[in-house]
Amino acid sequence: MAGGPPALPYRGFSILARCAFAGADLVLGEGFDAQKILSRLAAERITHVSLTPTMLAQLAALGSPPPKLRHALVGGASLSPRLAREAADLGWPVQPTYGMTETCSQLATRSCLPEGWRGGRMGRPLPGVEIGLTEDGRPKARGPIVMNGYANPTLASGDGLRDGWFVASDFAEISPSGELNILGRADDVIVTGGKKVLPSVVEDLLADCPGIGHYAVMGQPDPLWGAIVAVLYDGPIPPDDLLAWRRGEAAAAFRPRAAHRIEPFPLLANGKIDRLALRKRAFGDETQTGAVGKQDFAADDR
Image (cartoon, rainbow, N blue to C red):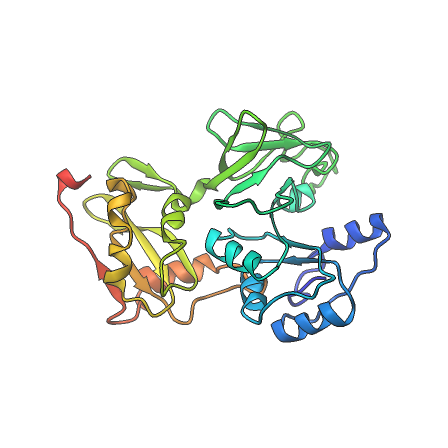
């Protein structure tokens, strides 16, 4: 089942292709209305559904899934451990996925959600997919699901590939057993005081924070440190309380120094966070008065 407006002709194309190859019936939805989607899942005895984390959150807020649903593939954005666990406890068969358009939307899928699952831990790659890491720690993949190359005037294959490998714009680790752990987007890395901070590490610390809804971690420009770690969020928790949450458990460079409450939180039509709009609202002229907290620190606190 696919949601979201048909703004682009290829939106959800991998879902169409998977169903065609499997000989499965496909149910399409116009837009995304959680109550209507939940009703259709039950009425049409749907067994598989593809969701973004935002869609999953809206469905889980309505309760448990229909008993016929066996797979809820969740991708398109970072899935927080808190949301994954809350949905799984309600009976949603949560299966975190990782992939991109260039790899038919999937490279790896966690077939079940183990206890203590942490965001980014995607398990082993799909059958027939070979993965590796570049020298700077970016995941690369090759196999039958990888594109032949980007469209170009001469229709030459291989455009955008390196010796047949597609390199993603993320940082990752591969365990000795071959499991893929996504650390975060390479272009989201925050350089603060000369130290590199992956937002996903900070977001893991916030996963269980009470009173927080949507959230993202970004680098806020700072004249002294170059950037400081900032949390952009919605929810009732005051910014100063958010900054104090689990503060002692994080290394100094990873401690959030600023928090901005952004309401309404900007989302794209597919449920992903609109990071460009979010950054503009937080660090431009539109940040809400009275919704900002900031912690000062000395050089020896780094």
